[in-house]
Length: 262
Image (cartoon, rainbow, N blue to C red):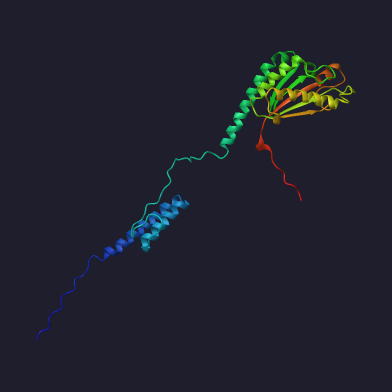
């Protein structure tokens, strides 16, 4: 009895496709990695890592969010070039506030100069603007009788005009009283300290009555301790008898608390 011939096994000529597919997949993964390394950021790296794990381990990543199908590689989320953050710089608002304060201070100086223009032309008043603010120097002869702290009627009108300009802002105001070294000894003013302080207080009281917030006002008397000119001549002593109105520029960021050494 003849033995039945075994059927010939059919040879698979397409086995190379498996190796080829594996090679193409690895090559694709290699180029994806190289592309991501060209501009690495944390978000892109995390997306790429999750995508590769899902592709080669057949696991689902980020169960709380969108699922990544097995065998598929999610496209990394790339930042759009040329876009600027919508959040303004941290100090932009503060810089704008300072700019507006400088403009308001400059406008206030111009208005004060206008209301005191006649006295400025006579050399009785000087108005200057600097880093500390606006300084108004007024000769005491314009404001007070000799040896007194009561404002003259003509001075009240000029000071009230200055106060009305200053009332529109919130800058601190310091009023300083100054005298010459000529001794004074009256029941009301035992020394130049009391006279200079009383004169500064008279101006502060007028400013408060004219609408300036009292918490912005400070009165101080220096007597003859801070002269502007030599007291050896009548002209120098007359210049030293004055009232100074300082409208201070507010720069709270320039103030720093110093640590206490233990």
